[in-house]
Image (cartoon, rainbow, N blue to C red; front, side):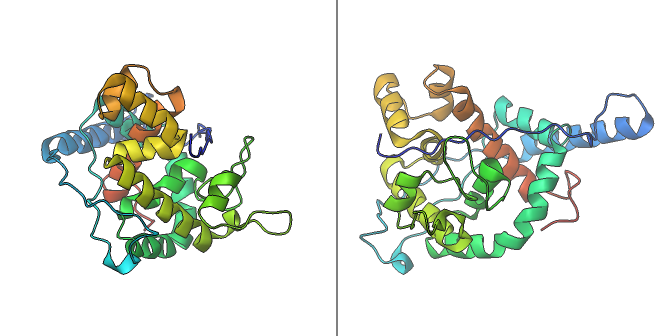
Length: 256
């Protein structure tokens, strides 16, 4: 495995669910509202094939000349809708907490992603990795908003030693993450696989593709090639991205 970034973020179930099942009129209206939004999502979202992207490497091509990499489409999958419902109800505090923090960092993160011509939806990765906690550290040794392990951080130009840890510097760490995303997309040409590799390592994804003979993440997942964390990582990412694009519809009206 060329690198590995391992971090399991425990979702703390808060007490601010908007669907409590208590049967009162307010809860019924909330349930119907969320159901209507998800039904609208089903009707309006289509899944056109992603256009082929040029093969690129950050170290070979000036950033300004990289052709725009296609945006990340949200698939119409039961797994994605399951997490949309969760984040709009029992997991609502997870979204609110992350939204509150990301307001401070989002302009810088989006600026850097744009410099690398990457989809701005990748700004949602720190939601899953750390809820935008810049000084987060995992038991496995990952650190920072993007949860870099030390060897991977050093590979992408971050200084990590007993005096300094640039994984905790938002600007430097985001540049490193952008370079990693470009390299992964260059190798895999598929955003679901890129995100799976970000979570579990390129070796895990490459072996799964070779063994199964398919490049469809959800098919690989159903065949048991990924652990539980990675199987849930991609649906969670898509669910969060869908909610971020339609925050008002899901009731998150006070955040950018």
